[in-house]
Length: 305
Ligand SMILES: Cc1cc2nc3c(=O)[nH]c(=O)nc-3n(C[C@H](O)[C@H](O)[C@H](O)COP(=O)(O)OP(=O)(O)OC[C@H]3O[C@@H](n4cnc5c(N)ncnc54)[C@H](O)[C@@H]3O)c2cc1C
Image (cartoon, rainbow, N blue to C red):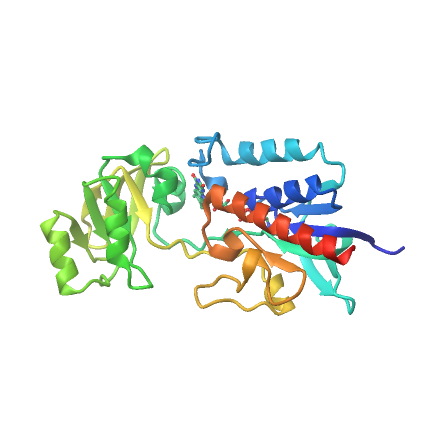
């Protein structure tokens, strides 16, 4: 039996993919959204900073979006994983899933997000998403004026900018770089002038109670009492390799190369959300889904003319 052919397959049902599905559903497009259901922010209790839903459980946000999408009968939501994609001579995409399904589509969107490879500090998994976070815009306000730490170095040599950013939320700040800090003498002096202690010893462990960070333990045994921390780097990498197999290049910073509206060098293949930008936040992901959805519908309407 021939595969079902739809207008768009969307891989990933986070805010980016769901938002694209909404625009496309409202454009009467036949959409199959396939989501593995393992988003990067699942570790966090509450998601902040998205208008009208500030302080909502991440899964609740996705559930509300899925509920809204049920109204659009041309949108089919499936819980599955896309494991490979074949591109036919006519440019259509044939997506194969873990459950053995095949769906052929005119356009394909990857909204598959990133995964994390966190530093190997003992105790980090107990506090990550609870009192130690990747993004101060997401969780800085809840930790305002608390004793904070910035943990890690910056691969891009932009450590000072990171420190300046975190200081927005608290003046009680220390920096633990887990190795020689990528700071010059003048930058070190600036930290000193502002009372920001710098610890360059390796980090041994993060001590906590019920997810609440209490101390940072250094390899020399020193313990620094802290109530919250931010990471300079979570080791994020693309959740799926499929776009690369299809010929999309990875940029040096580890995200896929895309042009306007997330369109890649392959006609009909779009990449949006964290998969495109590494960290968009929920609002940014929703915006990207909307933008790509509009662009895709325009392209399809011209094809259909
Ligand atoms: C700890 C933490 C806390 C955060 N807190 C906030 C916050 O408070 N506010 C905020 O705005 N942002 C926050 N973020 C960032 C936010 O979660 C992301 O920017 C946003 O979710 C990106 O949306 P997305 O749709 O691109 O990807 P995701 O939300 O990651 O969704 C991607 C989806 O694609 C699925 N998938 C992956 N591969 C496949 C495949 N092959 N087939 C099918 N499905 C697949 C995944 O399982 C996942 O469900 C936080 C992130 C982290 C890590």
